[in-house]
Length: 239
Image (tube, rainbow, N blue to C red; front, top):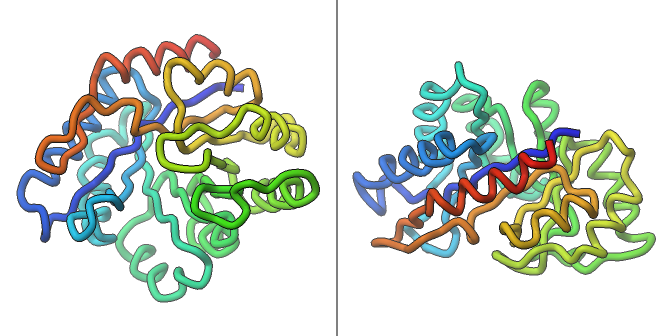
């Protein structure tokens, strides 16, 4: 199965942050593309408070990137990590503004998002950081894995926090509950040191930000092209 690596872009608000927000997104995508990543995910930079991107900002950024890369073998996705109850008032706006090629959301909300976006790759987060099920194991983790597999194109898990990788044993256990042809995403903590053990454990897709950042410059996370290149090599060497 083809392994894939997506650079996560921590996006900032046009209104709160100013005119450098869009150039930052475009430059990050350029680095990801030129160094050989399979695509990018746009995500609000939650740790930046009011400076984080809003849904309307993500719509603008997506339009720019989609226009730039839609004819190339490079995917653009959006992180929309809202739970089912939170989607009711926002999905309609999302549908009217964007039809993303990839969408990361909570696995339960995927039951709704797949209806609205039948041709979008849905990355459904489960046993995820910040949730009560993050440490699930045994029968509970099996049920979560099966539900994510049922409703999502790429069931996606994480470690306990941003920048913390999912334990290898957790990835192995999840892999044992999924069909062999089902993809498995990792959305935190992957780096050039642990990506191969994670692949050996059964992961196929990597959504990476923290380990690729060279510096934070006036709230902008600046990517290190060399780290992106090394991550590309580590993932692509497995096919």
